[in-house]
Length: 301
Image (cartoon, rainbow, N blue to C red; front, side, top):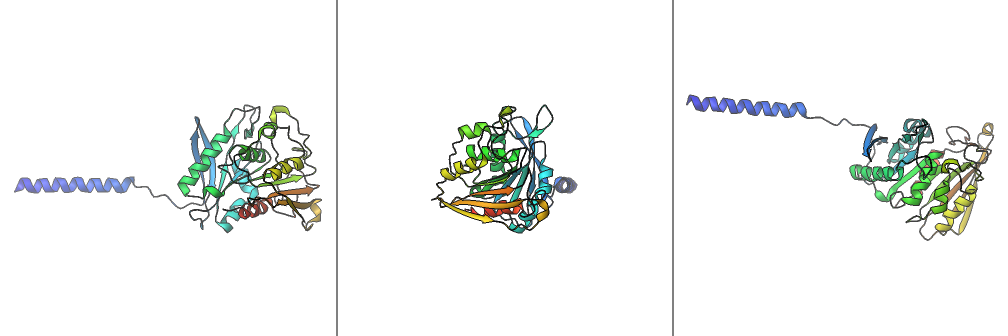
């Protein structure tokens, strides 16, 4: 009898310890809206920031925003204010971080000669990982970027149109290699914003070919290339009101439409504009971020 009682007490004690241990090691994932993560890819721990609005639901769009040369994910998240637009519309935003060159600058390898980093593979892998984990709509995954981030957006448009269904480039263009070799699997919509006085990425195609940056023609020719791919045969022109005459620039939009697939090509000319993200600095007549989402929203599947 005593042995039975002792056995019962020992079992009860062990069960209590086991239950207590389970409670100690249980970790609750606290709710978050903006958070940093890493993804191991080809031996590197690649960083990125996600913004998940409180009204986010499964099957929502996913928008990538790529920083410029020498910049960072945190910086473009701050000045683009894309999180606010995400909060208003319920889509997920990803701000990936580029790697650092031996010379110290962060960059995206938009098929450039100065880098061997596989950013095409990394960004494609990241897109599918996020789609799987958060159940975003793979047909509504888009990429946008500033300057070098715009170059990289075109690179993804040329090489990974099965992953990224539309791109938006602000002050970027196609690298020389992309211009000479672009042959996308799918014809996708394109948005381009260019300043006529941009000295960093001149819109007339005179950027130096050093390191593989230059080689593409005037940005108007680049836009025509994508318009022809999409068989756009209609043109609509819009002049935006000059609501802030202190910025010494104005904006017009040319839309190429009529594609059998419904894809459109939107080209914003910022007359007098420089290497700017309209709405954050430079031109104040439009918000580049709002125009980008308007464009992506137009092409939701």
